[in-house]
Length: 62
Ligand SMILES: [Zn+2]
Image (cartoon, rainbow, N blue to C red; front, side, top):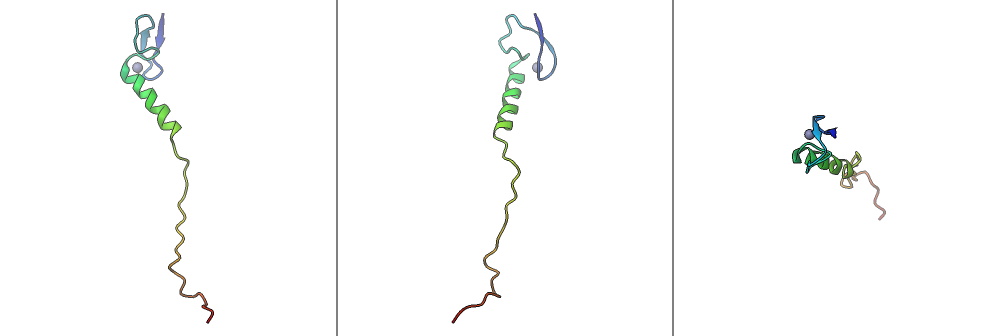
């Protein structure tokens, strides 16, 4: 049986392939890396910088 490597699309034989469904360990690690990157991807969040120092106009009750 011949399958295509999902990473580099090269055709590899399924039988006796240690890295199936990938063609090599390199592609296996690449897939793992992509999966990990997707899992731990942080959604874009904007850091709001609120400065409390700029309060010179604040009225101080005496
Ligand atoms: Zn490959």
